[in-house]
View 1 (cartoon, rainbow, N blue to C red):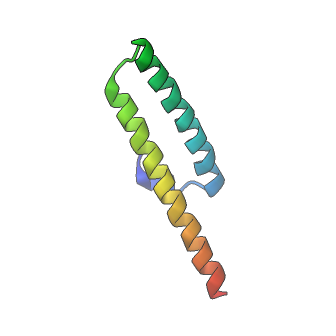
View 2: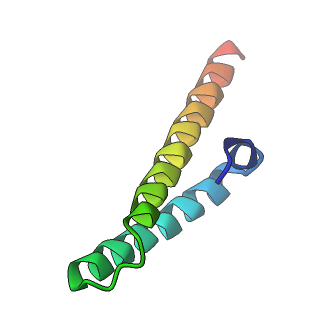
Length: 71
């Protein structure tokens, strides 16, 4: 997932994508525990995507807070 694509998304879209990826990560970890994991790289990539989403979401929320204080 590219950061440029994430920045074009609305806050509620990012939130729903975040929930979706957290569920995906849970399933991947469960498969790894059972020995059915396809590749460990996918778990790492999912974690990175979650981190990107959370970072951009925090940035958006802080910008909204700063804009509200200026008015």
